[in-house]
Each structure stands twice: as structure tokens, then as C-alpha cells.
Image (cartoon, rainbow, N blue to C red; front, side, top):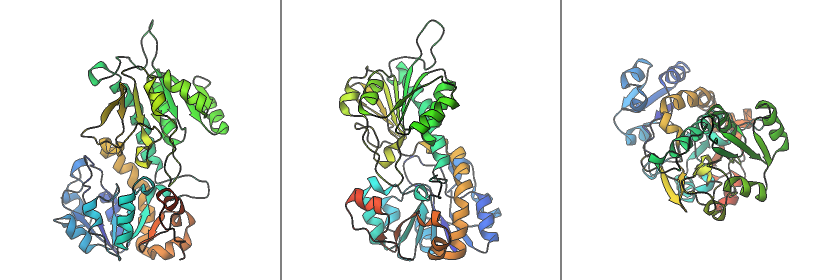
Length: 368
């Protein structure tokens, strides 16, 4: 199969869909790999390294799409990339369609087949291709929140862990999956006073055990969320429903009652966000104020630590890239139910039911 690796064009996105080690493996499997020039320059991977791994370098995005059958990316395709997709293409990347009508309809109109990293799901309900980026984003959320609590960044001027004789910052994490747990780990490590909120009492019990009863665990309901948010210095939204829009759990009214200079970070913003006042931002302009509260809502947070993120991501995406290249989408889906759940659009038809419901679009059952 001819496989293309374009340079990411989303704002300040320096990750790349495949590293030289992955190129070498795919070529060893009998495929051809084409990489856009400077695709890996943001993380220190040169064209020469790709060439040494066996790839061919192409001069433009357009050349990659024109040559390749499968496109491996990191972030959802931008309008310029969607315009280049054709019915024979297989797009393999993060999509997050449930909160993005233009992207969804554009991909459907292209007639292509689109596989989303974030909905590939084994029987244990884990999300192996989302996990490493959730780990990165969770850890970053606390680090970034701590930074924006500084006066020079518009915050109230509080140190997350305080010092002896002063109070520690109050941090509330809503949603305690992979991202939320990593946010808690970082907040605990920095000495904050942490509250974890989740719908699963089992998960709360696990967290209580994991952190040796040093955090406050609360069941997710309106009252607990409201009280915790209002009294927090930093709120981290980490709610994920696979393939669906995140529910709005933190309201504008709650935000308005927080102290000026407080900070919110919404990790779920690429799925619509779980904080009502959040909207996607970029690394170029990452924050905005609502009622005196600093909002950080960058939709590709891991792009800021692109080297760590790229290697962590490609460790888990290569398995399915090899499967697609060897067997094709239809046969791979018959072989692997987890992979089958990753197919969001098949030959132009929307085959992921939750996305169809969220966007009120026609759902077509996947028959392969």
C-alpha cells in the first residue's frame, strides 16, 4: 500500500503521524511510504532520517494526497486537507467528529473512509490510541493551570502547593479517567488540595486507595460540582464519552461565582467541552476571560510537547496502520472488533451512530 505522511497544518501542531522507526517497519512489511518535506522538523526529525528509513520525500501536501492510498495524520484534517481527499483514500487520524459538523460533512462528501484513533475500543472499553495523549493532556493541564494562576499570566497569584503558613491552592478535577487521573497525580505532586469528581463510585474508591485518602472524592451531581467549582482556584474538565459530545457539567453561573483570577482548563474541548463557557483556542492565543476567570481551552494541548507526544502516539497507532496496509479496511474490521469501532465514515457514509445522533445526520449501519 502507498502510505502518505503529511506535515500537520493545524495552528502550532508540530507532531507527526509516523516516526522513522514506523516508516522502516511499514516498508519492511512491503509498503511504500511518502513523507512531506519537513513533516518532522518540529520535533527534530529531518527528511534525511526518513530517507534513511526508506521513505520517499514529496515537496507538498498536495503531492502526498495525490500519491498515497492511506493518509496517516495526528489531528483532524483541516479544510485544505479535506478538499484533497478522494473516494479511494483511507484517512487514519484523530477526528473528534461529534463536535464538528463542517469536518464531518466534508469528510462524507469526499467519499473517503475515515478511521478515528479515539474510537478504536477493545472489549475492556479502554481507548488505547487515546490513552497516551490523555496522559499527556492530563499532566499538562495541571502544569498549565499552575502557570496561569500566576499574576503575570492573569491569575490570582497563588502557588499551587503554597508554602508553610499559607493555604494550598484548591484544584477540582471533573472526570477521573486517564486524563483526569494524570491531572490529579500532577496536582498532588505539586502539593495542591485536590477534589476529584466522577460518576463512578468504583472509580472514586480506586482513587481514594491510589492516593491513600489524601484527596477528596465526590460523586458527580449538580450540587457537588457547583460547590467545588465555586471554591476552587483551578478547575480541570476531563470528561470523555467515547465518540460523543462531552456533557456541559460546569455552567456559566458557576463560573461567574468563582474568584477573579481563578483558572479553568478544559481537556475535553475537542469533544465540545464539559465547561459551558469554554470554546476551542490555539497555542497562539490559548486563553480568554469570562467573568474574570482565565479559560485555557487549546484543542491540541499535546502539540506543545510534540516530541514526547509523537513518540507516545506512534507507539500505539502503528499496530493498526500495519493491519490496514496488509488487509485493507474491510478485512481488518472483520478480524478485529476494536478496529471496527474506529471506522467513523466508510466510503462517504457516516457509520458511527453516536456522531450521527449528536450532529443530527443520517446514520448508515456498517456492513462489511
